[in-house]
Length: 235
Image (tube, rainbow, N blue to C red):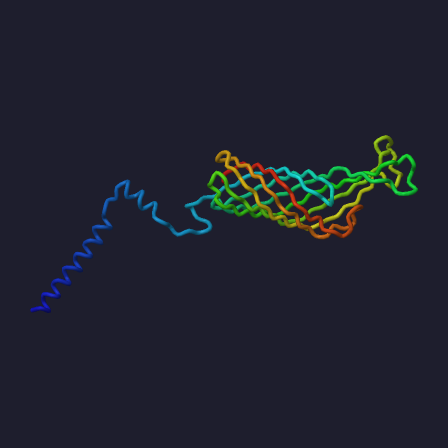
């Protein structure tokens, strides 16, 4: 008798359980229920439809020092953005230094009183840019460039401006060099609008040896850059 009663109770509990499952599956959820379900934590992946993609175009301006020569730098880059926090793209920078003065060598033409030289060049390549707190009004970006570049050093004297003759050995002479570069950086960015950001930061330029320049002998052109960046796009 007890065994029969136990079987009946077990069957009733099982039936109630299946009935509850069927009712739950057929339940009509309210709008409030749908919002609650949508807010439940979901599995996260690097690329998914829950986050979205974007891209932006950026221009930057800055200052650097090339072996004691003050230099103006400007650049551009175009980036693809995944899930608000990872940028991948390509870009480059160009630079020109202020002319540096030096005394002419012994035995030079007496009309030559000053020697000038400056350096111009460009470099670029692949950009990677992780971003922390991208959707916050103030956040941090870590742009890293890996690539190559070239630079030219020109030298002339004070008579260059008055005459069109280039037969003097110190007038209008040029040499160039190619180098590889890596440039990690950090920017503090401000969201001005949904499509516009401004960043202020610094980067450190690491190059291979730059050979054959007039005033640089087999040395890397390592140094800090100080940058102001304007970004426009979908972040």
